[in-house]
Amino acid sequence: MTSLTQRSSGLVQRRTEASRNAAADKERGSDDEDYEPRQEEEDEKGDSKETRLTLMEEVLLLGLKDREGYTSFWNDCISSGLRGCMLIELALRGRLQLEACGMRRKSLLARKVICKSAAPTGDMLLDEALKHVKDTQPPETVQSWIELLSGETWNPLKLHYQLRNVRERLAKNLVEKGVLTTEKQNFLLFDMTTHPLTNDTIKQRLVKKVQESVLDKWVNDPGRFDKRVLALIFLAHSSDVLENAFAPLLDEQYDLAMKRVRLLLDLEPEAESAKANANELLWAVVAAFTK
Image (cartoon, rainbow, N blue to C red; front, side):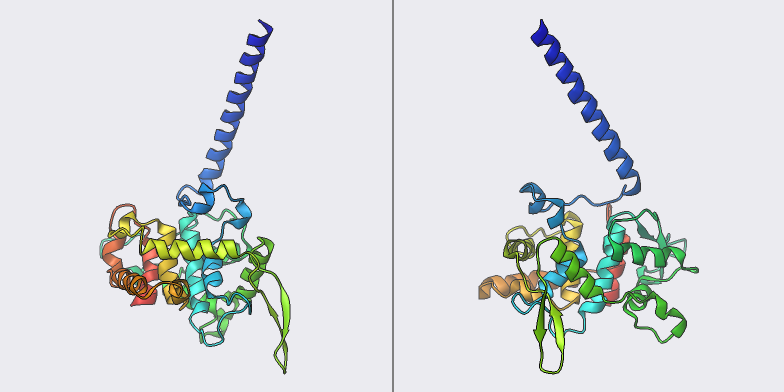
């Protein structure tokens, strides 16, 4: 009898705990109702939250040289690419969206970005970008935000929108997550802080995810793509770092991967954004880079 009572008590406790957890999840979901669930191998393998990377961190990690710990000096695309990542990340987390297209059916690049929720994301860079969008009236377009956040504006009154030291701040995030480390390197005339790779497993998993998305796990329908993976392919290409993920492939695999990437790049963002369950802001960013 005592055993049965203990079992009943334990069952009630478990049910109570489950209901509390469900309530907590529901409360968090109110701020992130449109947050896209991560369908990555990291979750399946039970990795801790510290190793879950944002789109910005993934693109930077693809661009970093493993041993040297810095991006190519000749890459002048990654700066704007990282700003595009921020806009998509905020959209996937339910913080930003495009204004309604209206009766005149405005194009994606003509529609303004509006703040859907000002709830903090917990990421300083994302929260900084979100605050700029929320506080700006009248609203700006996706193309304008990419330029403003990159500091590519001729208007001195808008220079305060520029997000500074983005690559360094993202690298420090990756150091905190145990992916990179910090070193000082001497380049004759000056010293530079670098961030060599320290956790090769995370980098290889990222590279494998990109490769498989256009090879073994290829789906010939953008609507069936995981939105994060789709955004990663587009933004890695726009940031000129996608080649790094394909470098280890055999020639035949490389040709097939690039052929399928080209199929994605040739898609019409306006048409794709009108499909069911599409994220309009994601396709607006794609349009800004591929127009």
